[in-house]
Amino acid sequence: MRIGVFGGSFDPVHIGHLIVAECCREQARLDRVLFVPAATQPHKQDRQLAAPHHRLEMLRLATCGHDAFEVSTAETDRGGVSYTVDTLATLAATHPGDTLCLILGPDALAGLPTWRAPERIVAAAEIIAVERESIDDIAAIVTEPRLAALLGPTHAARIAATRVRAPAIGIRASDLRSAIAAGHSIRYRTPRAVERSIESHRLSARQ
Image (cartoon, rainbow, N blue to C red; front, side, top):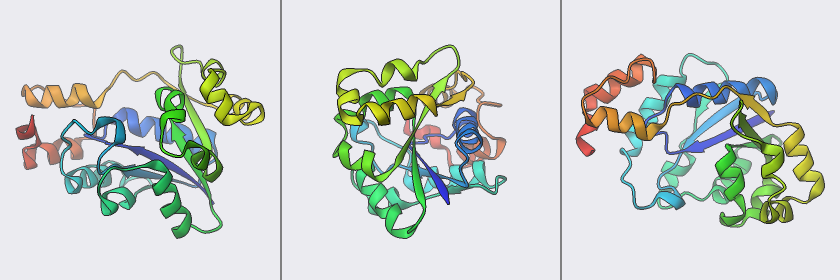
């Protein structure tokens, strides 16, 4: 099987995440998409996240209606700082024979050379790059010197040619957190079940 690996803080998960996952499932011909919430993201160690069990619950509520979507606890079970190279090793052990496809937005793709053991990441998973319509240019990003050196010309060309095109959805988790903290509506920006979970657990209290 082809398994998409979609990482992030998902604090909270929102409609934009779900649209990207569905675009990747369809265009990259994925059999499943694993949503993998981080315990602590390496580049965001100074920000307090909602507790892992709350983020896992929100993800399960958001994805339960889609047979190809699944939530993974690989990073929250491991705890500490969540490094993608470790996550891919864990998933490879639990999904032998399957092809792991790492879903990366344009910023994550551009920053890949700064991640822990990027050469091992590139060797362990097929890279699926997401390009927002009329905003991003994956073909240009893969020519940036450090990324081009990491990928090599053949791999860079393949990533550009197979990029996933997604609509530009102007929803950010940080905007939702700000709205929640201010007592404003987040209706239609996240599934209603997620909105209710946020309300019932009073997750705005951490802001």
